[in-house]
Image 1 (spheres, one colour):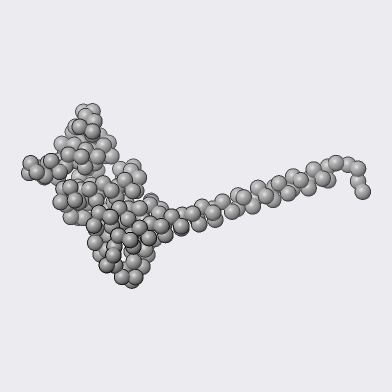
Image 2: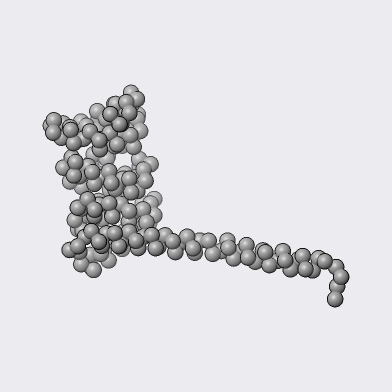
Length: 193
C-alpha cells in the first residue's frame, strides 16, 4: 500500500475525465433525440389539422420534409413548423410540400424564423388571395427589390402582411405593394403603420 496521495488523485481525475467524455459523446445523441421528438410533434400537429389525409399522404409529407432538410439550410423540425403553419392555414395536403419549400427558402433568404415565414406565407395566401406560386413570386420580388434598392426583406414582408389586404381592396397588385413597402422601409417608415 502506497502512502503517496497521487494514485487516488489520478484515479479521481481519470474518473472525472471519463464522465466528461461520456457527456461530450452523449450530447449529440440527446440533441438528435430531442430534435426527432420535436419533429414528430410537428407531424402530429399536421395530422390533427389535415383530417382527410391518408397515412400514405402523411408518410409522403414526412419523407418530403426530411428530404428537403438535406437541400435547404433549415432543420427538419423547422420545416415541420412551416408545414404545420400551412396546414393550420388550410393548405391542402397535396400542396403542403410546395408551400413548405417556398416558405423555407424565404426564411433562409430573409433571415426569418421558419415558423414566422410559414405564418407569413399563410397570411399572404388568405389576406391577399394568392396561390402558392404567386406567393413565391411575391417573395422573389421582395428579394430582388431589397437586393437592388436596399431595405430589409423581413421589414418589407411584414409591411406587406400588415397592409397588403388593404392594397387588394384598393386594386393594387402584389408586386406594386412589394415595391411600395420596399420604398417605405428604405426611407425608414416602420412596418407598424
